[in-house]
Length: 393
Image (cartoon, rainbow, N blue to C red; front, side, top):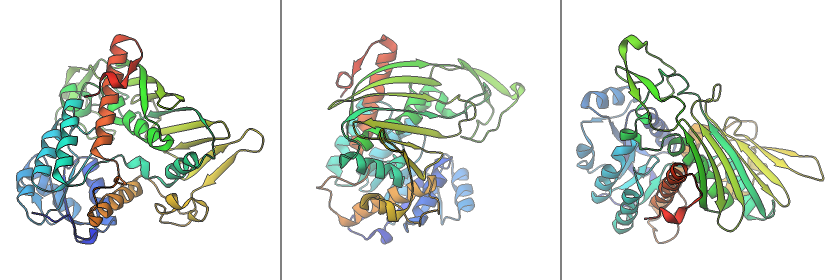
């Protein structure tokens, strides 16, 4: 059985999934100094092609083959949502650590069971909420925790993309059977919700949601469309598919411990490629951050000029400095967040101490997000405020 006591440099990972995010994990693992045994796709042919393209030692024929390889200590799951539950269970029961893309599973019944299995396994079980690891998001969290912004009044923002703007834009995520009944909120909105709850240190306790399917029928091209590829297929080689998952959502939020919030999420906002923004207003200051300008933190003041903190380790708090590898003026971005998350995850494994609170997003965090998503669904369907506790498993 793989050991959880090995130094992180001696741990070996395997990646499951060859789509958009699988190769991102491969790059992040390499930059984190983690050995990679290989990758597995939906077919042996895809596995081999991905292994060759990414320069990996092996393209596994199946997850079963991965789990029969004694060299593999950790498995990264980057597959479509509907596979997460059964794959995570198999990995944990094989005695390996697991890092899963979000959402953790299709519903809170599955995620609650995964939390239980993970706790009994004695293995590290994380969810890839990588946006937490931008240095200036960590800096914002530290400033809030230290009391610099004062009492929290409200947190607002958005997460907007345009990769599903056209009726010919299609991906497995738009189909409820593949990705779940909730799409824009579950796919990208959960990143915003996880980030803002982490930054403020407050959980969402109630939600009022309005969801909209802007494009009720899409054209599914033969062979599908890669995420963010920008490719379209003419209708002559496509079939119409009825869509029930939302393209847009607007949520009002109530936070435990006080404070209100609001966020809108869209995957049909023209010109927005990957735009997450949050702003937290407090009794002393406000802070705001945008994912497309990730090396700047806006600090709002009432009685003196506003400030813009540029990511520079020399100017950051100790917690943020640990996750900023380059000097000021040398920008860090999306790929760096995976590197930092993996360092946190693998560093925790190396300590062998699973009794203390893990420094990475856990299955418990993933479960909480799915419970929140179910509250969002119920709120939109019933047209009322819903307490998150109403949907808790």
